[in-house]
Length: 322
Image (cartoon, rainbow, N blue to C red; front, side, top):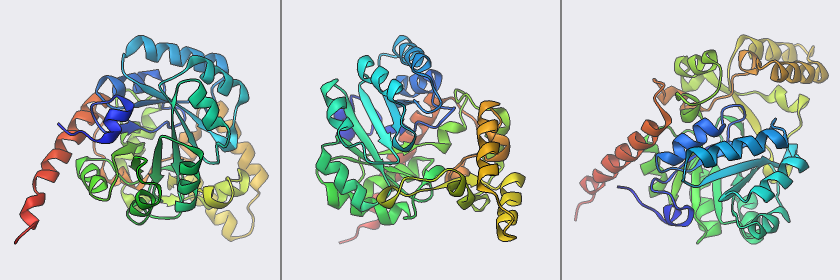
């Protein structure tokens, strides 16, 4: 048994949140995580309002546990937002920008609010705006992530926003990571890549296979992506972490030869997304890929990580001597 203040706030039994990875964060994965005692998440990115309505309905049909609906602020969809407010999910989460007045709108709908941040400054701003949970995401995380490593960022965010509970994200995939995050002041963890490599993640088998085959050194920042799809500025600036595919290597080589065309890359990315082939070109993943070697059910991941964390924390007294 592992219980933190995050569990009390969110109504969960395990301090584990499933990150809202685009394409993978559907009702199947979210409900499996919530049924196991964690907090499952849905992604609103690339989903029409009607599809999001269906996803929320399916989650509610398949779990009695709480869940979150995520909105990306630099790709904000007003129709999906209005649908989310009308659906009144237990939790609404934000990333890649400043939610501003949308925090009050979410609270008015009866939802708790989580915001993912990549700097201390953005964490402090989120606290001032009244969010309920802050996710401190380190540079090790898959997809759009910041430039500060988790172990440097996390304790600073904890100090800056206390008593708001902070959740750790980036480079975490097992119970040792959860135990370490708790020792740095976090109240739980937010996991993306680990849940991509699960039975319920609705992504192509080749993407899962790429994660299993990758070591941490195979994951790198894909800077050229930002030239094609500009990130949020200032405290919200990110660069995607991806597994180095042949496409990524070729794009980086063209950039080095000054033969890189951002517009061409943007068109290629949009086409790949529409044809559900983005993983073939740009397989998003974090450095925790080096810790992942199997494709279990999402519920088993939650149980395993909690058990591993309890075991790791049980060894702590061994290092204390009078």
